[in-house]
Structures are given as structure tokens and as C-alpha cells.
Image 1 (cartoon, one colour):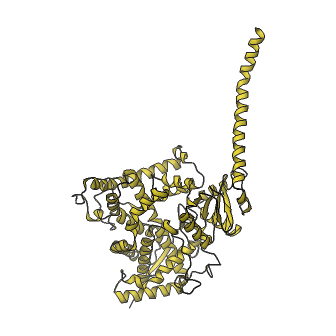
Image 2 (image 1 turned 180 degrees about the vertical axis):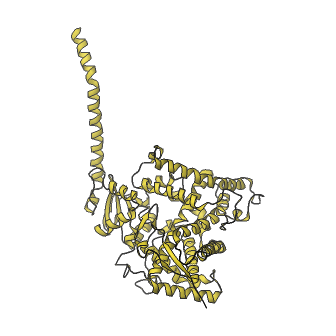
Image 3 (image 1 turned 180 degrees about the horizontal axis):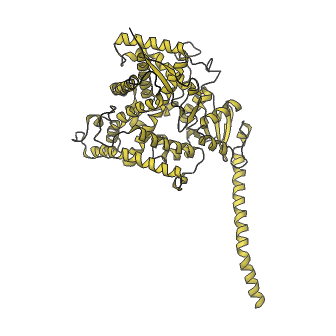
Length: 520
């Protein structure tokens, strides 16, 4: 009996040790099996160039460090220059194939989306949809199609033509701000353009007057600095998540988490009253409620709520936030870089100014008729996007089946991304790629007439706001050229010292000194 009891005691005391050993062995075996499976699955990618990586974490430490320094775009660009037009980086054990040939990028996107071999990566879709709720850019298949179908007509070139007066009013406010600034005082144009683009997109989507002195009774006022700060916090969190930060980390008691929840709460409080009113108008089938202004009644929000019943409160708030973010930074930063490049390229500046003067004298102002004569101004914007692709390195697709890109087998599950900064400097496509040369977009010769313009994306997923961005940018640049000469305060460093939140922007806010022109 004594020996039996002793045996039981010995066995019981050894159980935790045995359980620990078995647990560790099980975990080790599982990790080892997964490592072997992934290595075997992505065997073909081992032949592609790759940056030096950690044996377990891959290139994740470099990616997260680049995000923290707000230099992710530069890290991807540097790797592209070092490793060539096609290479692989490892986000932990997950591969991301990076492309930097413009025509390869365009063909890959168009053909991949068309035949279903590439879709928006599941991981990235989750990150997009975690911003506030399900949004267009975070969906694929039918969930993307009905959203895109609803918004497409609103952003078509014909529909946007009726908003030219609103856009002109917003641009004229910028002109008046610059006029009121003493010639010796610098103007930080990036925040000025952020206000311009935010007021325009808020007016079109939410029915908020672009006039700074006007109020809107449908919801809280548009306080540009506060809204922009909140959007920047949301955008920076997206970039951290896209490069490896876990979704659940937003619940940790950190400053980043507190900032995120405060920003999200502020933006939702700003958007909710207008969304609720649009839904109320849909439910009551009324467009003439006494508290509704004509501008709000004609807003995209009201039109979309009325014609697409699949949209509810949560998804309309999320979609409105998506459009607010997408419609602000992209055009604003592009305008800043265009102003900078014009300052440093006097030949282009003078030619552009002469064209604007001729259009003004011909039509009496810059209006819809003038745009036909402003192709060179639009070419300046395209050339700016080639050199400073605002959204470089912030998106990707995922292979749904084994596919071939440039003769290389890309296994199912591989993410495919691209460096637009590297693509825009491809010697085989763009002659003298470091030279700011808008004429390349107007040359009708066989060699240049098919230059890829992929900064707005390609195929059916091409940027929804492309026409708005070009309209807004062309009008703003034309008015600046008509009224002012200018110079960069910090010279070329304004175009070289760049950072990336969600999108790329000038870290010094592009300070400029303007001089009012004398036409006498």
C-alpha cells in the first residue's frame, strides 16, 4: 500500500513537468510544420532578390522602423533601386513581391483583376475596414461592385462639371489668403491646399459650404485643423497595421490607442448628424425638409443614401470618412509638389504662365471653357505625380492562384505590391526621368503617346476621384500662375525632405514667398 501511494505521489508531482514538455513539443512541432509548409509553398520566391532579413521576423523590423520614421515609401524605393524591378520582402513569414516597372505594374493590375488571379489582399482589406467600418477600398467582388456602381456616376467628368463653381470659389479663397500675406512673409502652401481640398470634398459629399464664413445647419461646422489631425491619426494607424501591427493593439492602454479612439470618436460625431439626416430623408421619401439646405439636398451623401438601400448608418459613416480622407491629402500634396517643381524650373514656369494668360485673355477668366486650353497645366500635375507618387507603397493585391509575372511563378497567397516612386523613374519608359518635363505627356509620337499613367491605379479599380483631382488641381495651379510669381523658401530640400503618414507629404509644409504680378 505504501509503495502504491508513493508511486501515485511521484506520478502526480511529475505531471506538470510532463504537460509542459508535451506543450512545448506540440508548439515547436506546429511552428516547425508551418515553417516547412511556407518555405515549401514559397520556394520559387527564394530565387528572387530580397533584402537581408531576420530568420523569424523577415523584414518586419525594417518595415516597422521605416513606418516609425515616416519613411516607408523611401525604404521601398531604396530597396527597388538596390534589388531591381522585381524582388520580395518578407512580412514575418509572408512574402510580398514588389514591382517597379510601370508597364509591368499596369499589366499586372489590369490583367490580374480582370481574370480574378489577383484581388485586394485579405489582410489589407481587414485593415481598411477597421478604420471605421466596411468601405469601398476594403471590399472585393460583389461587395465592392455595388458600392462602386453607386458612386461612379457622382464622380464622372460630366457630373463634376456642375461643381466647377464650388471648386472655383474654394480656389479663390486660397488666392485671397495669399494676396493678404505680405510679400516678405512665407506661406506654407501644404496646409493651405489641405484646407482647399477638404472644403471641396466636404461640400460635394456632405453639403458643407466651401465659404469659411458660412455655416451648415445639418451638422457640426467643418473645423479643418481638427478634422485633419484626426484623419492623420487614423491614417498613421492604418500604415502601422498594414506593416504588421496587430488589430487588437488598439485596445492597449497606450498613447497611440488613446489618440486613435479620440480621433475616431471626433470624426464620427462630425459625420453622424449628416448621415442620420440623409437616412431620414430616404425613409420619409422627402427632399424638402425645412432644416435642409439646397446644398445638402444636392450632396452626394443624400443622393447615395436615396438610391442605394444597402447603405446603412455604419457603412455611410465609414464611406464618408473614406472619401474625406481620399479627397483631401492626395490632391493637396500633389499641388504642393507641383508648386515646388515650378519654382525650380523657370522654363516650365514661364511656359505655364504664358498659357494661362492666353486662356484668361481668350475667355475672360478660368472656367470650363478655359480647361480646353490648359492641357499643359494638367501635364504639370501628371509629371508631378510621376516624380512624387503620393500613395506609393500603401496598397497591394493578393494572388488567388499560382500566377506568372515576368516569367516568375508567384504562388497563391503571395501579396503583390509596387513602388510608384521607382516606377516613375524607369529609364526604359521615361527619358531623362530626373528632369521635370511636362511635355512628355503631350508628345503624340509613337514612343511617348502610350506612357503609362498609373498613379491613379489601373483597370476597373482605377481611382474614383481622378477627374475631381485633375479638375481641382488644374484650376488651382492656373489661378496661382495668373496672379503670382513665387520662390521656394527652402529650395530643393522642400522636395527632398519628405515623410509618409498614410500618404507622402513635404515635411516642411512647402514654405513659399509669393509676389503679386503686375500686368501693366
